[in-house]
Length: 167
Ligand SMILES: [Zn+2]
Ligand SMILES: [Zn+2]
Image 1 (tube, rainbow, N blue to C red):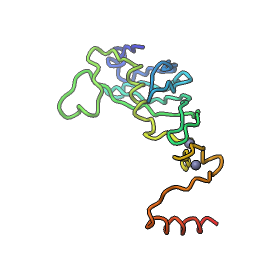
Image 2 (cartoon, rainbow, N blue to C red):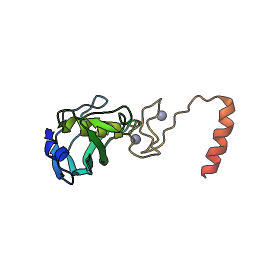
Image 3 (cartoon, rainbow, N blue to C red):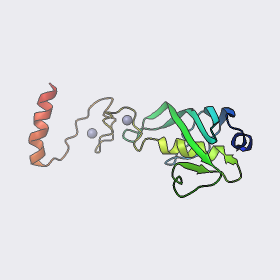
Image 4 (cartoon, rainbow, N blue to C red):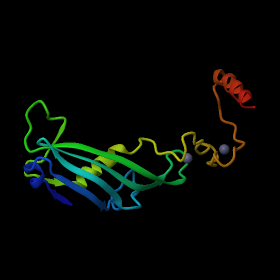
């Protein structure tokens, strides 16, 4: 979706409301297609004393396997969308502004890059996911297994102490 920002750039005080749904269902992240719901974007573009900006929120359901135990997890994600736009850049503001020379903004691209950058580097079913046993492959969140892991003797002492602590 391309948004024409001409009216916005030309009129101080102008507001352009955004309330739309984008379809990223074909976009792949780490080999899966995690965007199982439309990405709802709600907010406003504004021209405030000649400065054009957007303040919005993107909301969607994200479904992907846990990076540790491979259980499929579906989670609601909320991503803030906040940018300033300019039709030309001087050297001082290059980093702060998104350049839209022809006042036409590729909205999907903008939202997708914000959404993509907000994704966690490790997607876990829960923060303390125990993962799978490296020997028998059992999901250790469900039940512990009886595998004896080979262990360096120095760590064995520490591990013993930690286990005692648990009881
Ligand atoms: Zn997990
Ligand atoms: Zn095991």
